[in-house]
Image (cartoon, rainbow, N blue to C red):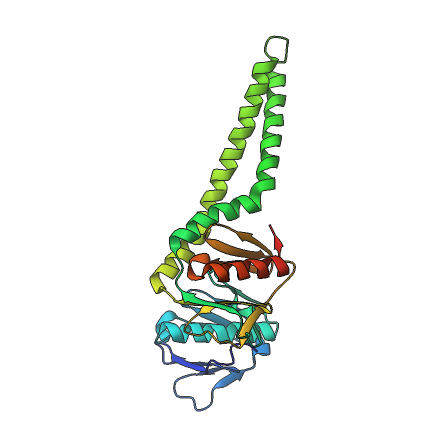
Length: 287
């Protein structure tokens, strides 16, 4: 189980119910002497939101609200322990889209001293500018297909309604071309709106909490974690199925098993940036 550096977290909600998240999950109701103790494998599901942890067992569902936590650090610690426990026990869990990687991806393994380290905060401006390139990278083929199909469909409609002849075929071809371009522009705008809506809450949440992040990249893997709970003994191993995109301000790692992982270049020296580029190229495929 990862994040063994974190101590168990005890919190009490407004109803007087006490929860303990540690190697096990415990619940103690007011007036009772003995808590109900669950192993992580006893859970049926786990849901982590921004300030809420919902834990389901075979006989009950427990929702730990934000006001039960005394500090941001306590919530981050409880979240990391719960997600890593559920991941190790292979319990289904889900969480909101975040700037930082899923805590369930971490394993207990020492990060070597020769890793590339940095600590700092994200630039929301850099995240927003990188979203555009990420979207193009993901949707490039789709946009080409939309443009071709849109143009062909427009030509078919023009042929059925007007008909091609010696005098108008050139104008109809131009019309079909611009219809294809218009279809691409429309789909692109819709995708940009969806992307902004998807990450608007994420960026807003990060701006609200203003977490400082510790970054570590090495031959074994990488770590992108809140500094309050960072440990040099937890790491995400490289997955050769993952891909990466390098922009002017970000290294962006994408994969099916996790959300987007952002590593800002501004926190690293030029020499460290070159090392990170080499490590990404060696362990991942460029998209």
